Amino acid sequence: MPEEVIFETERRRSRADVAALLRDVADKLDGGGDLTLSAGEESLTLDVPAEVTFEVKAERETGGGEDELSVEFELEWDEGDHTADGAFSVE
Image 1 (tube, one colour):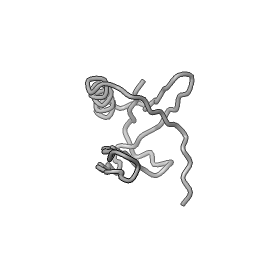
Image 2 (cartoon, one colour; image 1 turned 90 degrees about the vertical axis):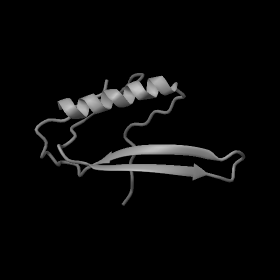
Image 3 (cartoon, rainbow, N blue to C red; image 1 turned 180 degrees about the vertical axis):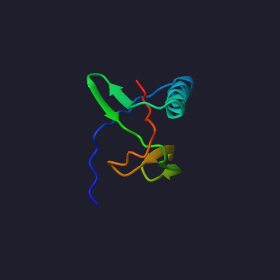
Image 4 (cartoon, rainbow, N blue to C red; image 1 turned 60 degrees about the horizontal axis):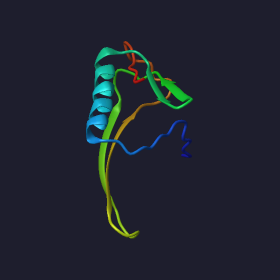
């Protein structure tokens, strides 16, 4: 199935900044509401259902100089799945 990127941002941040953003996401998951992602003038609002598939993946990328490590956190659901009492937002 083809994949379409509808929002993306990448920026170097301190560990404290990343932790604060992840706390914001966690708070929104607990509180409900829409999830709004914003970067500059670009934004995207998502309606996240009450149940999602949660994936955590750690990777090592090799072959281009020093190895690069990453951790990815992914929430996944079928578009149009509105089984939620509410969704969450990050702004």
